[in-house]
Length: 192
Image 1 (cartoon, one colour):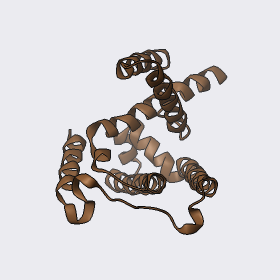
Image 2 (cartoon, rainbow, N blue to C red):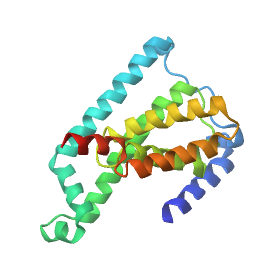
Image 3 (cartoon, rainbow, N blue to C red):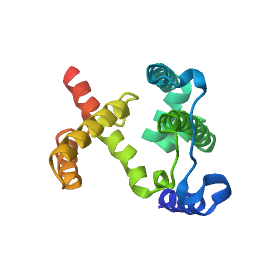
Image 4 (cartoon, rainbow, N blue to C red):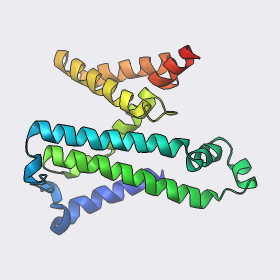
């Protein structure tokens, strides 16, 4: 509930702080440097940064910090008993997550050339959550696969029906029921 309340505060600030955020008009003309204006060059630049981000996340997940995060997630009291400071761990995880969210936001802003207040609305916050749940929570590649599956479903369904939200919702419910650990979790279970 605190996250949703904070999201509403951010939405209100973005809409009302015209000098910084542009209000309803958003921030316009956010383009990369001239050497990145070619679509192919920008694609490879974005692919390199996204790939480097994923590789770095894998390193973080396998590091002692990542293991401490897993320990705190699985059993917080035990983690504290062995000397892990949960508060410091949570703040550090928040900073790491913010860094990667900022990297993704920068890539997105340069792609679109503009940033609008609609990106702070609640439905935009739900989409990444659905993508993560669809792909699988336990692995760094799960959200990528979930995002690809979500976008493919969204593109296909909107092409054939006006009731795309109903169709997408029904398919997502079926997929979550069929793959409770996500798509990656289902493949990991079969491989084991």
